[in-house]
Image 1 (cartoon, rainbow, N blue to C red):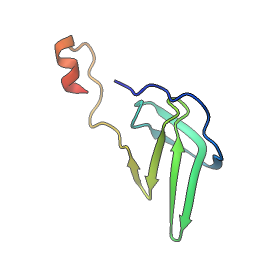
Image 2 (image 1 turned 120 degrees about the vertical axis):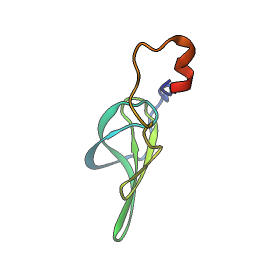
Image 3 (image 1 turned 135 degrees about the horizontal axis):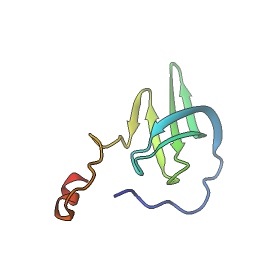
Image 4 (image 1 turned 90 degrees about the vertical axis):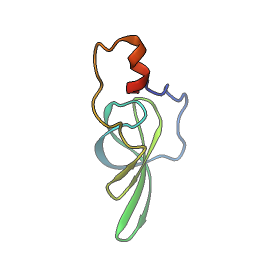
Length: 86
């Protein structure tokens, strides 16, 4: 089950190079420029704000936290099996 949207606005969010990623909270592929970032050569560390659920995702080089769930959603599961898949 996807996390509910966080109400409100983030403060002091900057604009960064737009990227597309799959949010680990709501499992939606989004694109955003909204970010907090730190540059420590040769790396840039970013926190992106999902425009769908308004939750933060941390990017360290190519690693994303939280990551995305392994596999794909399975449709038409019996209700008693749905919690196992999540």
